[in-house]
Length: 303
Ligand code: CAA
Ligand code: NAD
Image 1: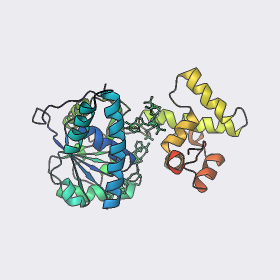
Image 2: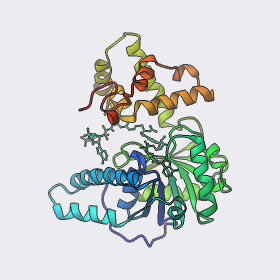
Image 3: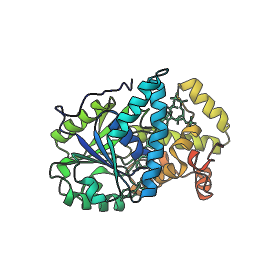
């Protein structure tokens, strides 16, 4: 699948330069994939330390991808790695980071006000035709877009973790997103050899709207004493063909992320509260700093 395309970027795509804000888990993944497929990418974060961490994420993941794609061919592996890095620049100045962009993808912290502040600032300095997209998991795209004067050029572009592996990208159209914007984003995703789906601006879009209630019900099932965590994981892997069991997936997504999604949706009141009812086990784990894989412990232990 992730076959490598060495062709130059001077083609019919409207988008050649992409700026990605946030060099965390998702931002770094988006930077990597965009660069791998020939876009010129600027990775922007608040300081050099965060940028360096983002570079490490890309480095580790890119080595994996290169090994998978070119098993016994070290030269081809190195060529893919070098080509990808040759398409990546970094910046810690958010204004300068936006200057060249035909498309800005935001993957910063999951906070409405913070995202609005960033987009409000970028709206003033980005090219008038630049398209803005948010990778938010759970916030309404239309609310984020309100911070700008370009709501027709604003959409959701929702990637999945781990970005280099997961083939899906949800494109979220608000009532203001233009057809042209949708078409350009669709082209960008196709060029990345990912599969786009389209969804209205509703809580959780498609995947999280179905996945999050499933994860929460798995936790409640164990909380009710009906089965063990280990057996629920085994059951869903072997009985429903899931690559990870729900508890493995909770740890993979991050328990703080999961909690913040369900807390937000309960407050929002747009979806059935029973589907996202609170869970004591989840709240307690987050409270004690056990956030899943990233902290070494969540429902499972990682050493
Ligand atoms: N870059 C980064 N991480 C990678 C990677 C890459 N290129 N390739 C694999 N990984 C990670 C995996 O998480 C795992 O970690 P460790 O080995 O370090 O413990 C490992 O690498 C597994 O890799 P394998 O190559 O052995 O496994 P695989 O390729 O067969 O499958 C998987 C890995 C694709 C993650 C698979 O297990 C899977 O599909 N799991 C479900 C993932 C999922 O559902 N993601 C969506 C989460 S929801 C979301 O993202 C939306 C949101 O808004 C919260
Ligand atoms: P993360 O915490 O790993 O990374 C966020 C990065 O954004 C940090 O490096 C931080 O320094 C940076 N940042 C914060 N404010 C910034 C600003 N104003 N300008 C530039 N950089 C800034 O977070 P993540 O897990 O990568 O998530 C990012 C976004 O993607 C969130 O909206 C999240 O909901 C969404 N998302 C997450 C997942 C997931 O599984 N983690 C999946 C899909 C979507």
